[in-house]
Length: 82
Image (cartoon, rainbow, N blue to C red; front, side, top):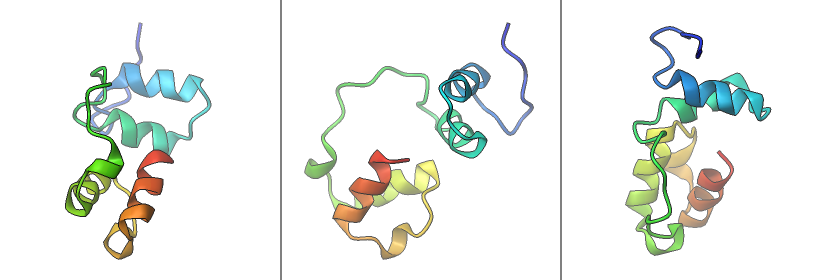
């Protein structure tokens, strides 16, 4: 049974799985709190095919700091490593 981590964690199951994989509490919480975190992917556009604004919006959604000063290339790197 999944532990309830309180209202600050939106997807407790995903959070626990990420923590078991060795992810930090902060990063696991950020991913688990992303609205579409539990959905399977594979159909999204490649980051390189997206506009800088789309990348910025995604970076904002997942809580990447310093995004307003990043270039498109830096946003892609930050999103891939978050």
